[in-house]
Image 1 (cartoon, helix red, strand yellow):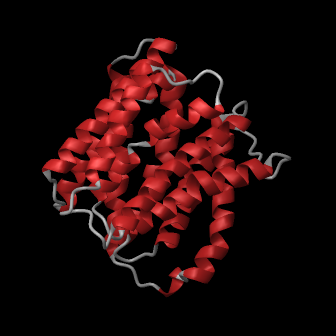
Image 2: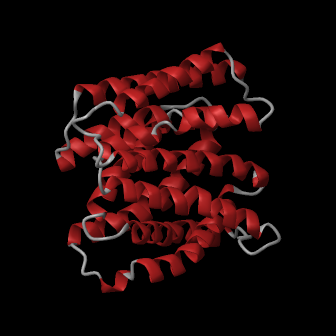
Amino acid sequence: MRQPNLIDYSLLVFLALIWSSAFFNIKIATYSFGPVTIAFLRVFFGAIPVLLLCYYKGIKIEAFSKDWHWFAMIGFINLVAPFFLIAYGVQSVQSNLAAILMSTTPLSSTVLGHFYTKNEKFNFIKTFGILIGFSGIIYLFSDNLLIDENNFFSALLILLGSTCYVIGGVLTLKISKKKNENVTSSILIWAVIILIPLVSFIEQPWNVVPRLDSTISVIYLGLVSTGIAWLLRFKILVNNGLIFQSQVSYLIPIFGTILSYIFLKELITIKVLISLAAVSVGIYFVRKADKKIK
């Protein structure tokens, strides 16, 4: 991997902005659409740029090959479940809380990596980072101004959604030898297939007369925050590697909190800032430990 330059760092920040912008757009989408519909439209529109890239590069898509069950399982766990859970939770909590809760993904992946991989075991620095990060999340749940008995369960669902991303990532190791574009296209296809009957029977979105801002947001979530973001992630991974790309984790909760204030005027309390700092510090120590191992 080459040494990152200004363009590489600019792309990393751009990717963080795209993924961070998803949270307030999910909030806007919930003004008109149900969580199943949001999940379906995200994967439907998200599949378009990825499939076009595979067609342009002549990459074979193996969604219905002998490994179809892996693609279907990962599509459900890594896309369908978290997209639904996050959209459902954001109906009742601020989008900036969702950004912070979702930023626990690197911490959760470190915990699962210890048990399900051979070379990602705990050490003192990692353990310290995990404890600091999750302490920040526990502290966030004590913010009675933003999380109370009416939306406590919704916040937990968002946290569960972040765990689904991690489990999906572990399962992806089973097909890690395949091209990233092929894997992403295949799991997106299966996510669409899984969601078609669910959205048809549960929410019937064709009966909805959506607001313009919700429509724009849900299309943006699919095309940009899902499809284009994954393609940009591929580019960064190829040029600079996983360790460099993983630094996006520091920026997402920070940008997510800032963007939610700019576009939705969401409340930022002292406990939110402390939790945000604790999660960022936790991620820093986990990544620092990973770099030492490398």
